[in-house]
Image (cartoon, rainbow, N blue to C red; front, side, top):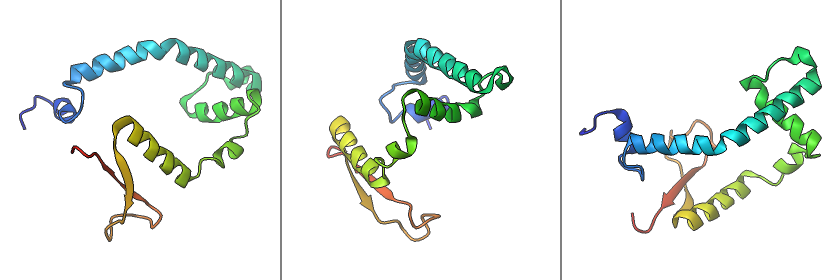
Length: 133
């Protein structure tokens, strides 16, 4: 296929010219968010210990979503079920359409599924179109 690795093949049709460019970008982004992510993780760990005492131990990956929701609810007086009511699937899709149009000049529309293409009748198929491609 003319590529030295799967990584080279995977980035070929994308903006990144090589796997090295991708890795460089990811490392740079990691450096930029490291301090803030560490701060947030420490806050979440502290919150868990306050709720569970020392018996709660360290924050585990499977704890993060649960304690993040609890902390938002407690600290910010935020009820996730109320917030979720503003994010129906149709509202999210409409927002996505606006976003991809404004960022990339891409239009998005729903197209019918072919027979047997989905495991559930509620699955939606969206088509993205760029006028120059």
